[in-house]
Amino acid sequence: MSNKGNKFIKGAAILGIAGVVIKLLGAVFRIPLTNWIGDDGMSYYGFAYSIYGALLVLSTAGIPVAISRMVSERIAVGEYKNAHKVFKVATALLFFIGIFSFAACYFGGEYITAKLGNPDAALAVKAISPALLFVPLFSAYRGYFQGRQNMNPTAISEITEQLVRVIVGLYLAYKLLQTGLKEAAAGASFGASAGSIAGLGIIVVIYMLNRRTIHRKIDLNNKQVEETSVILRKIISISVPIIIGCEIMPIMTLIDTGIIMTRLQATGWSYAEAKSLYGLLSGFCNSLIAFPQVFTQAVAVSLVPAIAAAFKLRDKKNVQENIKLGYRTTMIMAFPCAFGIFALAEPILLLLYPAQKASAIAAVPTLMIMAISVIFLAITQTSVGVLQSIGKQMVPVVHLGLGCVGKVIITYILVGVHSVNIKGAAIGTMLAYFVALVLNNISVKKYTGTKIDYDLTYVRPCIAAVIMGVCAYAFQKLAMGLLHSNSIATLLAIMVGGIVYLILIFTLKAITLAEVETMPGGTKLVKILRKFVK
Image (cartoon, rainbow, N blue to C red; front, side, top):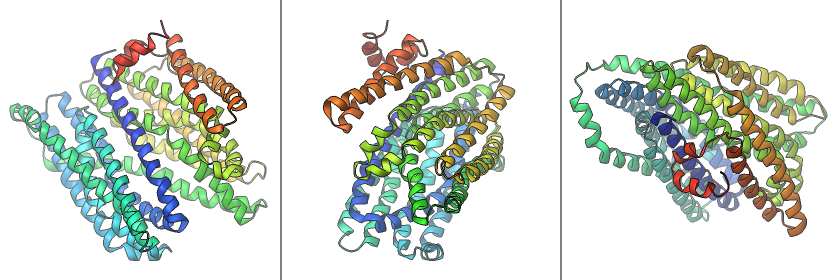
């Protein structure tokens, strides 16, 4: 593996580890908050986050990717001054977007919440609005460091942001609980504002510590400086298609919700039953399926600057090497997640939702279908990262759009079959990602000439994951019979499954010890693995 490949793997590993920490902190935040403020309070909090998320897409969906790619391209050809100018222009653009988003959220909070039928959420919306000033600036620094293929600042600042959000949000929610649910929800929402200030502060400090090194190369650079207007147009041309792509699935999910509810009721389910069935998908399954995306998204983010730099240099060999490595890394992580969730769907749901046993069991078939979609989504995310890095950012948008059209049709048909019901929506989602990945992969081959080794990339990790799933399932049943505790049996089964998978991927040579050694903490991990693998 080349040094550039090592750098990409390290970057993906760092972002993946950070993503796990952030997800765990999110769970630590949400569980007590839900217990304190209940359904009504959570409706205010969730409403505020929905508006915040919609406005945040403007600054965090496409522009950081554009910065990352453009900075990487310019550094690859020694244009350090232009790379830094991209960062400055993007920061100015994001600053103005932040002011607009903050003003819309803070001053329009009461109007928006009243129009959308939840006026009591206005205080929570105002409390979260300061985050819209700081997160865009935060994302500019993040994109700049990612373009330099340094993922540490992103990881450190994002963990800091989440940690402060959890501490401040829970503290204020608890303190304000006696005042009222609206105030408690606003306190929890303000956690995001405090977290964004902390995250920005940390990444600015990291930048200042690296400023001398960064500017040394800038000062020595005598190449012609690009016009601000040219850079601005380029940022917009890259980011707008990505923003559109990020909005496709949320819009389709919104349409999906209407289709699911009406089709379920049309086939004989009552409104209450239809709502419960939809809750199985949105509440029980989607949150679990989101967890593996932490790893696959980390690979996609790390791929963009690595491939963009090689593509700018017309280094076809390095482009193809990074693409192959990206796909392999993604599949090595996606297959065990998918088959692990598939094999242990029921015990995992009962572990997470012991107080809702009947609903958890009812959600099992839907979760098993969604588990398979993890594989399709992982390949889609990786291929999107590849296409974005070579300047074909509009291509995956069209492909995902076609997939979503298919999803709507399949969902409409299958949800209308009484015996299939909510499982039809899960099948529709799986189809959307399958269509997108097939079309994306055709485009990746067309534009880069990369031929994926199907045996090494798909077959070997799949075999290892299937055997792992069987072992984990069998062990869970055995442990359950002996211990009579689903929680302990399931956690032990996950550990055993993980060990079995690790041994198998090395035995089947899906990954080598040399490749593991390039990851953060890889040297220590290899010493442990050598005891089990020759």
